[in-house]
Length: 385
Image 1 (spheres, helix red, strand yellow):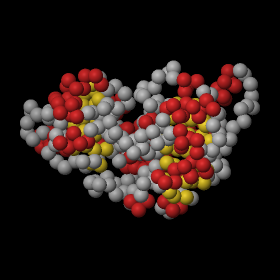
Image 2: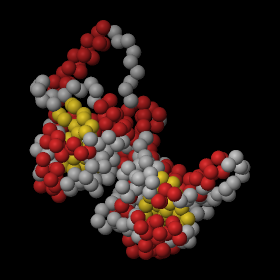
Image 3: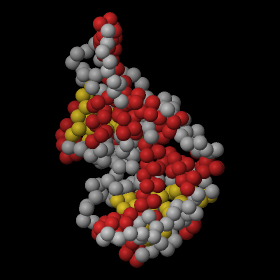
C-alpha cells in the first residue's frame, strides 16, 4: 500500500497514447490551465525557496509543477532574499530568519510557509500585520514525523553500539570490539509528545523499552487525522497500530516533571518545538539531573540545548553520549570541539529528508501555489495566524 501511494507522488510512466486520447488530454489540460490562470497569459505566480540547503525541496516542487507554466519556482541565495522578496507571492522559508524588516518588503506576498513544521525563524506578528498568512505542513500527514522518529532510533542505536569506536576498530583491523549495549530494557524519555514523539513511541515499543513522555497539556491530544483546516487526512499506511497514547507511554508528565524524568531515563530524546519557553531548556540543571552515563539525542532544533552545558557534561563524562541531527548553527562547523568526542554523532539535518516525505511536501507546496494562483482556499497546511 505504501509503495502504491509513493508511486502516485512521482510522475507516471508514459505509454504511447491513441490520437483521440492525445487530443482529449491536450484539450482538457488547456481548459484546466486557462481556468487556473484566470484566462491571463501575463499572470505568473512566483514561488520563492530561501537558500540552497535541502535542495530536494525546491527540485521536487519544480518537478511537481513542471506542467504549469504560470507557476515559477526560484531558489535564491539567503543573502539575496531581502532584495528580491518583493517579487514573490509564496515564500518557503527553510532556515532563513524572516524578520519584520524583510517581511515589510514582501509587498506581493500572500503566504509564508515552511517545508515542514518549524517556523521559529519567522516573525509571525509582523507577517500578520502585513496581511500575510503563515503556515506549516503537518508532519503526520507527509511521513516527516515517521522519518524523524526513525532517525531518532538510528541515532540511539549508533550511540549504544558505539559507532565511532567501531569505525576506529575497523581501521585497526581488529575484531569483536567494542562491546555495545541494547535498547532492550532501557528507559527512554521523549521530551515533547507531538507528531514526532508519538511516532517515536510507536516504533520504540517493539524494542522492549519503558517510555516516559512530557507534553504541555495531555488534554489537548486529538485524533491524528484532525487538522486545523480540515483538509489533511493521515494516510493509514503511515500509521502503526496502537491503542492510543495510554498504551504508548508508561508515565506521562508536563514541564514540572522534566528533572524527575531526566533522573529516571537512560536516553533522553528532544522532540520539542523551539520557542522562547523551550530555548536552552536542556541546560546545566537538566543535564546534571540526568543519570551518569545516560544518552542525549536531539532531532528537533539545536537551540533547545545550551551549548556550553552540553560541552561541559561531555568533558566531565557525566553525559555518556550525544547524537544530533540539528545543531546550534547550521551548517555546523566541522572543526567544532564537540565533534572531537568519540561518543558524539552528528548528522546534517536530514531526519525528515526522505524521498517519500519530500515528494509529499512538494505536492503540498505546489498545490498551494496553484490554489493561490486560482484564488482558491489553501489546503493541506496548518495556519499559525
